[in-house]
Length: 303
Ligand SMILES: Nc1nc2c(ncn2[C@@H]2O[C@H](COP(=O)(O)OP(=O)(O)OP(=O)(O)O)[C@@H](O)[C@H]2O)c(=O)[nH]1
Ligand SMILES: [Mg+2]
Ligand SMILES: [Zn+2]
Image (tube, rainbow, N blue to C red):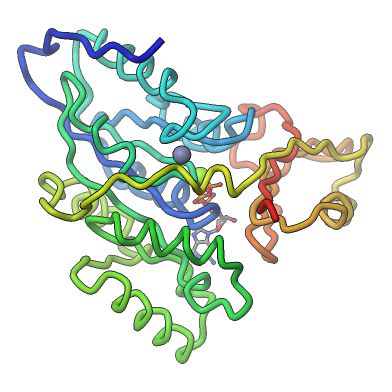
């Protein structure tokens, strides 16, 4: 059944601004949103869309920020529209509105496709932040799909948040910025270092989407170009063996662009596993009690 927009406006007609945060898989959206939330005590509601059946990101954000709603198992711009509608209904049912709503889109979302939701009853669109990982802009062997996806997303941004410049040398850094300037010459760029206390103001007060930014709503092609798998690691597993087990599990899977999950070794606290391209990060969870283990959500490119 198609989503039915309510006819009444909640909160005496007040409209709560919405910021969409898009950007390709693993670009740093969750990291940036957590930094932004840490830098403000305004009541902000966060909607988190993760394509896997387990919403690792919502748990990561919720641990530090109570007001988090998860949208799981599909991309809100292509296949989880009802979940999106239900989340807005739940917000509208509150007696007091949040100050602002931040939506983390899935890494395969086309931000332009969700823009109409920005003006659903009780809300108004504040803007679209697209998170762009600098290292992706200068990848020599980037797949055509990934390159096109990122370029598409960049053209839909009101503001670009550039991350991972710390991974580049001076020459690569200059090349990444030149590429970005070419792709989005009129789009303001802020950096992840500024996404903390100062960044909250910058990112959350775009003041309404710039008119004319997007001329057509693109077809949802990115989601179809990707495949989502749930991969369980062998058990029991010792902490020292987690990295090797992740490598072994991923070695058997072609064209992995992203993997993440929470692993519970038998001899230590749970570990957060993050894989972006060829880069791997295994870290302790800040508050291990709060999160049960999950299979690895592995996203691959379809060939
Ligand atoms: N070096 C570096 N790593 C970063 C930066 N920002 C994020 N990361 C790392 O990149 C990985 C992915 O970060 P997330 O914030 O989960 O990225 P995301 O865009 O939310 O990922 P998905 O929601 O799965 O698409 C994690 O291992 C982060 O620690 C950055 O500025 N520099
Ligand atoms: Mg995320
Ligand atoms: Zn989508």
